[in-house]
Amino acid sequence: MRRRVISTLVVLGWMGAFASGAAAQNPFSMDGTVPDAGVPTTQDPQGNVKELGPKNGDPTKIAAINRALPPMLEFTNPNQQVDLDAVYLQTRIAGNGDQWLYFGWLRDSNTGSGFLSIEFQQSSLSPTCVYTTAGIDFVLPESAAETTLINTCNPWRNRQTGDFIITWDQQGNGLAFDDIKKRTFTCTGTTVPFTCTLGPIEDLGSVEAAISGDRFRGEMAINLTTEIFGDAERCLSFDNVIPGTVTGNSDTADYKDTVFATFPPVTNCGVLKIRKVTLDPAGNPFADPANPQFGYTVTKSGDPLRFDVDAANYPVDGPAPQLSIVRPNNNTPAGPALLAGEANQHTHNDLRVGGNYTLVEATPLPTPYVLVSIVCTDAAGSHDITSGGNYAVSVPSGTFEFTLCIITNRFARTTPSLATTQSARVFLLDSVSITGLTPGAPNQATSATFALFDGTCTTQLGSASGTLIYGGTPNGSTATASMQAADAILVNIPAGGATFRWRVTYPGDLFNNAVTTPCTLESTTVVITFNDSGS
Image (tube, rainbow, N blue to C red; front, side, top):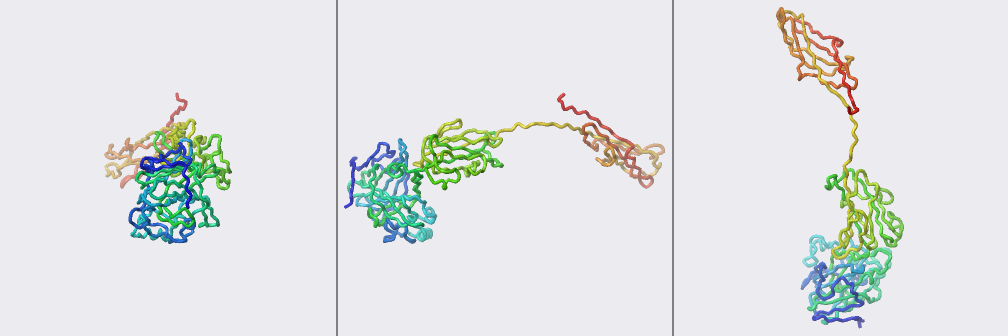
């Protein structure tokens, strides 16, 4: 006969409730109203339908199922009393810091005995068991995606030592759904899947439960801190949670209904994420193309912030006990600094919980950035710790997923230095008078050319044309040409001045030879005095 222990049995109208070592700190209300406020719902196929679950047979007994080779799943129709319609699972932190687990259920029938089994595995679900693939609804007709799942997936495969199950014996039609126990796996072997055995039945010292008045629903709450984590000097996380029903609390029990879903981890590991935001001088988000690196230091006042772990697991932060996390303003053996943007945030998911965490930014900051704010958001809300102060790191629970600290820096405007150098530019023009042209001859040349050279007549600085205007007595024996303002040659004048020389060319025609003035014929000297003293 199965041993059943009842510490307290309370009948609440048409609802049944019991508590074993119950604590007033329980953050969930055990009143038979299922689910408790704020607890999410995970639906499971229900009614007279075939749904996906383990095959019945020796390879899929509760103690051996992790070693069953695919295909080890098939479509079956569980009996109503062990057919789950929905489950409800969440963790919360009580006022005294203890972490509690809530589990609720809804089944097809409110009569008949059954056994609930919830397995908690430390390893994540195998990558071949992706429940969210399109086409997977766990009921017939079997889709191509479900065929692939059946042929490749064993959800229990990664079971290891320290994993455990919680069993809940539902006794007939009465209100005393009060037999909630724990059994822990011990496994041997060097590679997954291990050979595992179930340990003895363990009483739970701190558990509360209730069922609804119509007996279709039930709920329980377990103090994880006292029952699972205790004073464990290591980060414990159960990433794969498998609720279901079985035929009994024994190594040879068969599975009846299994809820395949991805639940949040059940963990005592605090999660801290640190994110960098950079702003431009006007305070707008700024993606700096230089991608500067910012450092920081995390400490837990007076205590190690990591669990007592093997130093080989933490080559970045050094051996335990970890008193701080240090990230300098560059990539060094102490770990990479923080870059701007959510995609580059740092995640520390193995920290001790506590409300005495501090965070400071490493100095000096990358030039020309200044610190704007450090704001940390934990389960209690947001805290501005720019000028100092504490925040809490706690485990994911309820709607709280992790503590997030955002360090915001602004690109500061720089004040440049000015050094001036004066310069001057002038426009130079020239003109020419021509005499001795063949009188009365047709004057075919139309323009003269003016070329400007440096003072040594070695470098030509510019040229322009001037229209020839003929006249004189006798007729056509003289001509003039001038550069117009629009044709003036612009030259730079260095300190101390400069000398320029002209060379003018008359191109000639049928009756007159071409003539060019020597470069030494005329010169222009420009002197400008520069004063840099401000006077």
